[in-house]
Length: 149
Image (cartoon, rainbow, N blue to C red; front, side, top):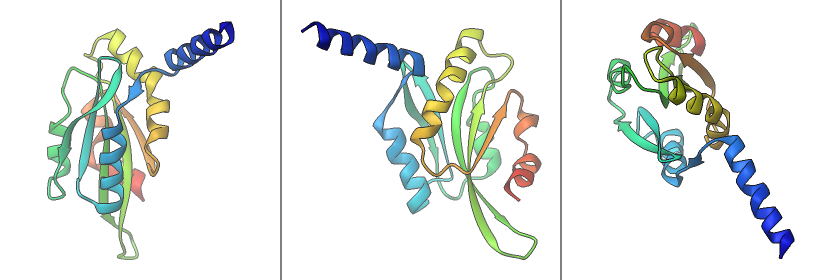
C-alpha cells in the first residue's frame, strides 16, 4: 500500500513539474488542422490548470484575423498553418507554434505559460517552426515568411 501512495506522489510531482494538463480537444483540433486542413489557426488558453482550445479560425481567415484573435494583455499558445510560395514557385505550407506572452501580461501568467510550453508543444506532433513573441512586431507576417523559407 505504501508503494502505491509513493507512486501516486511521484506522479503528482511529475505533473506539477511539467506544468498543466492538456485537454484532449487540443490534440484533436491540431490533428484536424494538420491532416484535414479544417482550420487556418488554433488559439489555446490555460484555464483551471489545463490547456483548452479557445478559438479556431476557418481555412479562409487571414494572418491578420489570427493576430487579432490573440488578446493584447494575456498569454496564449497558438498554431498557424502558413501557406507560401518558394523561390522555385512551389506551393508549400508550414505549421507554426507561437508562444504569445505580451509584456503587459501578468508575471505569474507568463511564468505558467513559459513552464508549460515545452510539454504542450510536444503534444502537438507536426509543428515545424516555433516563434516566441512578446510584442506584435515579433510575429509580423514578414518574420513568419522569413522563418518559413
